[in-house]
Length: 407
Ligand code: FAD
Image (cartoon, rainbow, N blue to C red; front, side):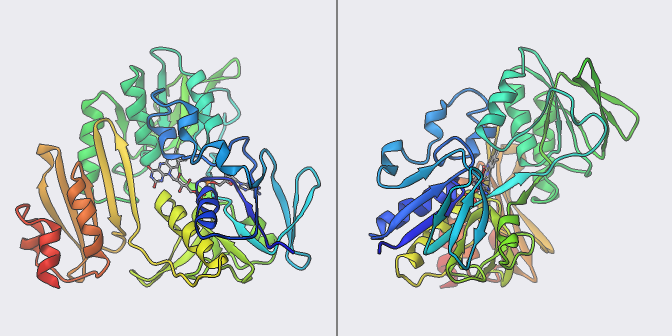
């Protein structure tokens, strides 16, 4: 009997599982089941070039349709249930599909607001192609766009909306932008950037309710008693993992499907990858739930290799990026728990990095238009070495050169 691998979720990670299984010469059969009507596609451009109308939908695809010719693909179908004893999944239309190996690649979904007015037309979230189509269709020229949340997604949407000539208000509860992921120096840089480009950025401002007229949103009432006028609203307040299917099947789940370094869940026949997982990270010695393309792709490669008979562990320095106007923020490592920051270069020159230290060890870096720092520092961070602050601050020394002094 041919070995059957069934992949639930047809997103970025799932596409990579298919690609890596093929590359590894997997001799079994692959079935891909996704609830969106699309083949696996890349989400990062959704809040960047695709929202800006600079990229057609076909260019989002992870691989062209022909790539999946030898794969059984079910699109627009949701897996409702996993039976681990019978080794089957059941889809929303009642079809039961058998597997020998199951891969859960169910990703994450947006957190939603609950307050008065959430049902009004004109209030959007951004996770998939359909969301962007809806936002674009709802933004007439010169629209007043209000964005809830100054995280990556909110600020990327703000940058695109300003570039398209809309007026933009951003409401953020915290006292600085992207506070969850970057240091005050980086927040200050993007704060100034957005204000310089005309964004009405309101920090320490919470949303109380949406105001509307005739069933459509007209503004946001804030906790300071002000109204932010809006023709259209985009909410970006974070995501949560799609781990309920796994939990219902009795797999171990804790804010993400728990997997080991081989991407195996608590059932060795079931792998899980990407946004929906929580995994052990060897570099930091902690369990992480990451929301990034790198994590989805690398876990996909690891799972595929192990399904195809390999013995591969996943342990990497996490990295991430965000594009806002002509600036690229690239993050390597996790700065959580840092106790010192070294500035490398000058924010005034529009190209600099913030190096994060914990107990004197180099644990992470945020780079703004400094791709060389980003590329070269990843290998250095992997060893979390102790490096003198003067050395880290010296832009005449590349990270390759700094690394050489450590070897
Ligand atoms: P996804 O790509 O989310 O795919 C999961 C798929 O499974 C979805 O299609 C979902 O609908 C489907 N699914 C869920 N449950 C079921 C079910 N029961 N049955 C069938 N199908 C199901 N990351 C970066 O690194 N850099 C960026 O700049 C960046 N920008 C982003 C911008 C936006 C607007 C968004 C939304 C995300 C961005 N990300 C970025 C995050 C990145 O896209 C995700 O980390 C990545 O897509 C995760 O891949 P995944 O395969 O785990 O999940």
